[in-house]
Image (cartoon, rainbow, N blue to C red; front, side, top):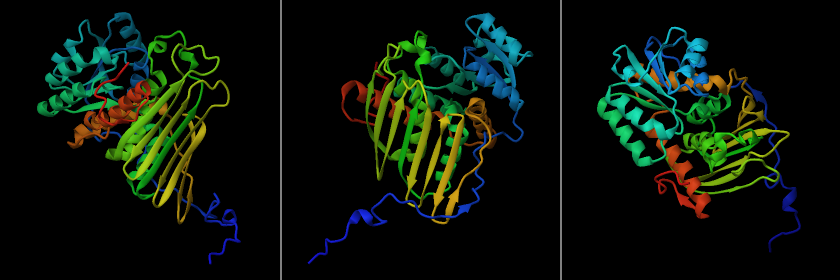
Length: 374
C-alpha cells in the first residue's frame, strides 16, 4: 500500500527552493561589440533621421570614417555631418554614393517602405549593406535581397542593435558556449512607459509594441532558440488611461521544439519600470534583471556555482557599434555576419507570426505569415 502520510509540499524536490551554491568567477565571454582588425572602409549613410545619430555617434567613437550622407531634407544631413562627421560630403542624390568606388559600405537607415529599392541598388553596385531594422515587411522580398547579395558576392546585414546590449550579448554568448546546456526556455518581461509615443508618427503603427518595439526581443528569442521556434500565439490590449491610439500592452507565447518561450510587454506602466529575462537550460540558467534596458545585472547559475558578471557598456550606442562592427569583421574575415539578413529573416518570421496571431486570434506557425499584416 502506498504511504500517503507525507506532505509532498514539504519536500525540497517539490518546493521552489534555491540551491546553496558558492559564488564563482564569471566566465570571460566575447560580449563586447566586435571590431575589425585592420579593415577600415569608407561608409556612406542614406537617411539621416533621428536614429542615425546613434549610428554616427557609435562610428565616430570606433574611428570609422563616414564619407558621405544623404537625406531627403538636405539640412538634416548637414546638421548630422556638423555634429558627428564634419568631413563627410552631403550628396544631392543617394545614387552618387553607389557610383563612388572609394565607398565600400552603405548604411541605409530609412523606413522599410523606402528601403528596398535602395538596398537593391546598393547590392547591384557591389556595395556591402547594413539595413536598419525591421529589415523588410515581406519575407519573400527579404529572401530576394539575400539571394541578390549572395549572387553579387557582397554582405548584407541588419541593424538588429539589441543583440549587442551588454546583458543580451553576454547571455547569448553563454548559451552559445554551452554553459547552461541545451536551452529549454526563454522568457522576457518588460514593464515600462511607452506612452511617450502618443501623438507622434509611432502612434499610427497598429502593432507598435508587439512589432516595432518587440522585434528586438523576437530577435533575441530567435537567437537563443534558433530553428527550434515553431509557432506563436499573441495578443494585445489597451492599457487603462493610456493616451495612445494603439495598444500599449502585448504578449506572445512561442512554441519551440523541446522547449518554450514567452514575451510580455507592459508598455503602459508609468511608474516602477522593470526589465527581466530568464533562460533555462538542461545544465544551468541565466537571469538578467533591472529597472531599465541600461541597468541590468546578469546571474549565471550552474551546478558548480553562481556567477555575476560585471558588464561594461550600454545598449545605446554599443548596440550600433556592434551591428556595424560585426558586418565589417565578417567582410574582413570572409564569413557571414551573425546579424546577416538571411538569419534575420527567422526573427522577422517570428514577429510576423505574432502580429498575424494577434489579428486572427489563432496560433500561427512561424513562416506561415509571409508579410507584415496590418
